[in-house]
Structure formats: structure tokens, C-alpha cells
Image 1 (tube, rainbow, N blue to C red):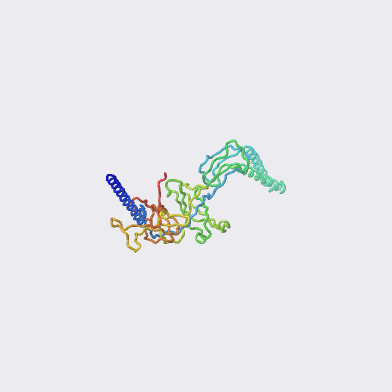
Image 2: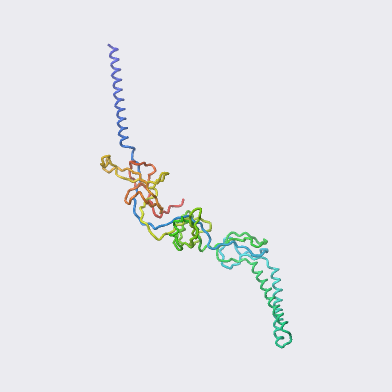
Length: 388
């Protein structure tokens, strides 16, 4: 009897344990089915409304700065440097003396030529008086006149030779690094320094051949030197297209253009690269959205549109607090030009639609979302972030 009681107790305990585990497993299965039916938990995101705006038509390119006037200053005649009248980086006037070469020999020859010229002048004056009284022949007067002209020509030639040994600035501008020193012998054509006129500069850039009709001479351009200083606005300069190359590059099918830009404050230097925006005459109506709303992928660009969640029967789903549940629907778009933190969406999105602009990277089509615009960043058309 004792054995039967013990066996009965074991059976009861085993049965109770089986019942408990069955209920636990059944509960887990039901919770899993409910979770699978409900889907993954919603993601916290930030949103922005797609807006219709009027943007000026622009064509963008990367350009290179070239000096409007720039030369390598060199000497015409050989000689030893006796005086240097500038330092590297100086601003000079047109005609200012930069370097003087030794002219001691030429100046001695000039003094001798001047004496010969004075003597020839005196002889010519005497012959003119004597020929008037028929004391000498006209042939003698002609010879003295010729001697006077030869003496003047020799004097002028020596003076010009001395002047050629004085190197002057051909125009006003800023000098580069000096490459000569006192006492150095210079062969003709030796580079002394570089002179650049920085009052205005040229910007050379290229555009696709389709833009040829939209970029005539005098078309406004906007040049931006990005990353040079913390204040980007300080290096945004306006200019105009000065020349359009009449030929098309057969390799790239692009046209070469040159813009003339006033160089206020000497911000632009030859050799720099800049961002160029050609401002077109026509303005375009575009749908704009923050650039962070666009998800770039190899199969195309897309955005996530926030919509109310609905059941298969079309009934809106509400949250426990009574607010409508939201889901993100992936929509492929065609992206146009950028302006600050915004881009133009040419196709796929209409004005007024709510787009995900923060947290889009963690979403997939149909994901549940919770909108948290209180912690999302605010985009701007003219962003000026701190330069750290």
C-alpha cells in the first residue's frame, strides 16, 4: 500500500510539472505568434515635410583659379646683381624698380658717347655757319650732320642698354618668392621672381556640351572657396563668364569656360580649386526635402514616406494612447540639384508628404515608426557649421 501511495504521488507531481510546462510553452508560442503578427517594435525617427519651392537654375562645376595677369620676372641682359629693391611677397606698382645689374662699363661708354655727341654737335653748328658763307662745301656739312646723327644713335643705344639692366615691374601686383641674391651673375632670362595681379582672377571650368546654349558670355557665376576659413560666406564671390571656348573636347564632350571674378581681399590665389555655380536665367519649381531623407543604394535612390498604418481591411490602426500608428513606406525617387542641406526631388514625391529625415538607415519597407522631431536636427538652405 505504501508503494502504491508513493507511486501515486510521483505521478501527480509529474503530471503537475507537465501541465505547468505545457502552459508555459503554450504561452511562449502564443506570444511569438502575436509578436510575429505585430511585427518588429517601432523605430524612433525624425521627419520633415516635402515642400514646393522656387529655385534658381544653376549648373555646378569645379574650377581652377588662374591669374588675370601673371608673369615670371626675368632680366633681358646678362650682369651681376648690384641692388635688390623688393622682398618676397611685396606688393609693387607698375614700373617699380626690382633689381639693378652692374652697369659701370656701360656708363663709362655712355660718358664717352656723350662727349662725342657734344663734339659732333659743335662741329655741325660750325659747318652750318661756314656753309652759309661758302667757306666749306655742302659735302663737308653733310658729313658733319651724319657724324652728329651717328653720335646721337650711339648715345641712345648705350642708354637703352643701361635701362635693360634695370628690371622693373611690368604691372601692379604681388610678388612671389625671390630667387636671386646680391652679387649673383645672371644670364639673360634668369627667373627673378613671379608677379601676379590679384585684383581680379580667372576661373577655368568645364560643363557638359548640352549646357552650351545656357551659358553665353556675361552669364553670372558664383564662386565658393570651400573649407578655406571658418566663415564660408567670406569667400563666396560673384563674377561673370568672360569667354567660352568655341570647340568641344572630343574626349569628354565638354565645353571649356572662363569666368572673371573680382578678388576681394585677395582670397583667391592662382592654382586653387573652387566650386562654381553658373546662375541661369530661368527659375524652376521643385519639391525639396532634406538631403538626409535620401537613402542611396546601388539599385537607386529612395526615401521613406510616413503613413498611417492600416489593417488589410483598410481600417486605421491606433495605439493605446489613441493616436494613429505610423509606418514607413519606401519610395524610389529621382534626385536633382542640392542647395545647402536640401535636395530637389524631381520624381517620386509630392509636396506635403511626410518624409523620414533622421534614422532612415535602420528602416525597411513597412517598418513601424515613432516620430521624435524634438530631438531631430533642423536642416538649412545656408548652413554655416562651426569649423572644428
